Image 1 (cartoon, protein in one colour):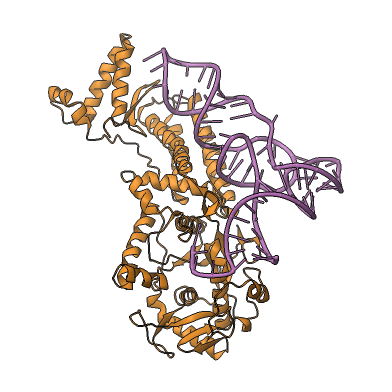
Image 2 (cartoon, rainbow, N blue to C red; image 1 turned 180 degrees about the vertical axis):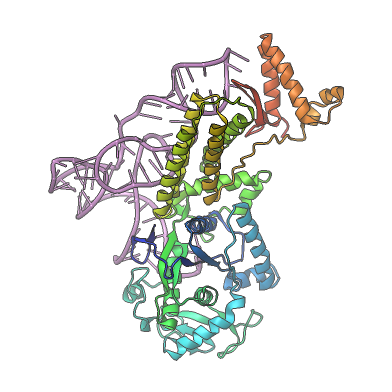
Length: 505
RNA sequence: GGCGCGGUGGCCGAGGAGUUAGGCAGAGGUCUGCAAAACCUCGUACAGCGGUGCAAGUCCGCUCCGCGCCUCCA
């Protein structure tokens, strides 16, 4: 399989350093606020990559960090008159909740910066010993000019950077591009002991330290993150790690594209962010729909391309998923209700399924092309629908093959992190008791299924008598309380309507 | 200014030299009492200008436009 490597600016064959093992590191959040859609995209992109690599049989170890000490956290704590630790704790919890809602698998290891400080101190000492870092009044800086490969990931030269530099010059730095490995603590800030006095780590250092400590390799296979991390963050990581170990830090650098709003990058500093929390509030009673719609929106675009986010696109993505629920419903119904006959057509379905599995695999093997992968599932669903239009009665064996086809769709969707329920159940809103209170009382039924059945019988009779307006009225009223009625060649079918029309909300 | 990415049908979005992407929305049709669902058909797209090819959205050059990074940032 192939992956696009930012370092070589090319797609390359993915060959892990050690047999089937893949050591993968992705930059996680700085926990000082709720994550936004742009952040979430990165975690979803690498979630799909993680799932796919595991599916391919690789033994993946996935580390994603939590930056729990940082200027922004400290500032936030001051604003809220609390401790940095409490802020971090609060937003770690919120982050985990968001990941859970979006169906992002937890990484194998999720270390915090604060628990990795001993390793960081070790690296700093090593870098100082090698002349790649220097102490200045309690701070320690990396001596960028002494690392000859600086700029190889972001394709820049130190001189170019120097020319375009906008950083305010810190007098203690030997060179404006030097970056902090260790920051001297100010009064009241969280601090750890070090050879250079009390302080805290610079941001870039944790990723170098965690890779060594938790992936236990000087060279790891995959390192990922958002496109904006290439410079300076990942460039600095390379300088630290390669300066310290003398070995290449990462074999494959993977970066996902941005989420924009009206063509502009979504970022806190721009002030155009939409948080996942806001979406959760909007989708509060149907978080699973949020998961599916959100993933549909992002995965129908390749992970490296930018996406211009827009509420309408989320709604459109949700509509795309309807075909999946419909085919599940159709299959569930056929399995239950259609009479058996003997003609075996399972081979036809098996051929379609195996074609899907193959083409899906080659799409995903080509730099995780989820867009093509999803389009193949839609193609397959169309083929299934055509098959079912042509074959209303199925043999037992054919039904078995149909179930296998459905399970295949489900398996592939799960690899992309979707969760479309296979079992279509009537999930009646409690309101039915009010709307049909009289009916319920008269019939003395607490059982909605039974009520529904009675209503459908009434409707059937009305239809038989050509009293269509009465029949339609029943259908409309059921629809208004969230029950969709569809007439099929085999009789009426009830299912939850996608958008119930509540009258008084 | 330096470095990098991109401009595809009404919208979203793959592909990247010759063959239907796919989705959403729309129009017409089949089926149906009507709906729904499903299926079929239609819109014949690749910023512009040159160039190289038997053949170019697809390669090369130029132009125009948009975006990102160069400062914290997924």
